[in-house]
Length: 194
Ligand code: IMP
Ligand code: MG
Image (cartoon, rainbow, N blue to C red; front, side):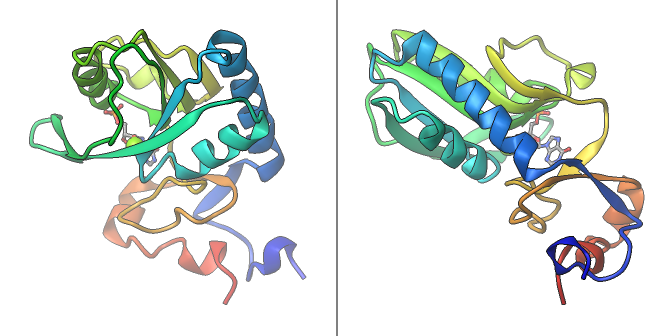
């Protein structure tokens, strides 16, 4: 049986990072966060929904004393975003680490960091699983990166295309984004067991 019980060969996507790679990245990033603010009871803020798996792996890779919260954002025209659902913790004087799935143009993070910074945290740092820095439109500080990737579209391990594929335990690279845009279910047959 093919690995994971997958039917047939994958033709529209391929594995870019396997679960072992992702576990290593989470371990590495967790170690870096612990070294930086592990003594300060940091607040880890996961950006919904993409960062859920990364946050879950980072927060238990090193069991240091921390708090966890989430926020969600939604697009708001012309590359702008707004907070749809906010964290429920006062971050004034706190050490905050934002966890993101992927930084692309940097617009989302720039907006978010501006908003969080205005609340007076003691420190505000960012950990991103993936960094597509070649696509950056605005410079934004990302302290810790799991992996640098080229300009490719990825799904899995929290990341979606039109709500699909988030639950894949690996990160897959999509070969033809236009084809996926035409048919968002394009990968279903090759990545999910029947
Ligand atoms: P930015 O504002 O362009 O940096 O957008 C970042 C957000 O776009 C990420 O948090 C993802 O939600 C989404 N995104 C960017 N690239 C990808 C990708 O390759 N796959 C899935 N989502 C992506
Ligand atoms: Mg995101």
